[in-house]
Image (cartoon, rainbow, N blue to C red):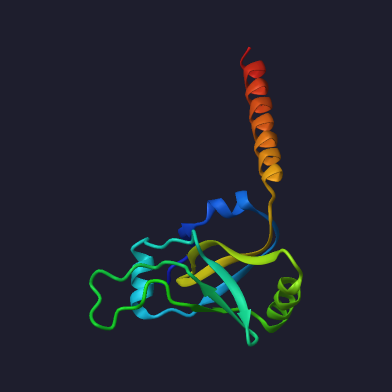
Length: 156
């Protein structure tokens, strides 16, 4: 059988980019069981309440919902179990230092398959204040309005 190529997105956390300032992103592998992989290949997952934390020199993905596989047997997985993330030692050391700073957290941005392997994109992020969110929305709206005006001018 031919090897799978490319990137197939399973789930995205769009709200994370609205609620957090993204400082850095990391791509990590995930330790999964067989039924979790099958459920992900069916396109079912939710990153909404998910977060990552560092414990004992390992990074763990917590509270990410991968529903039970429909055709699974008694050997099915727990939907919200903690899953270990696979990162390099220097990346883990950097994350340990940054997450100890106040206000920094690890948030999953997307869950996808890359060349047949399940990966998660996690971000080192700082929470936004309400006024930051309003300002970001105002900038986005102003940019959209400017693009509309440019398009109207080109059409004339």
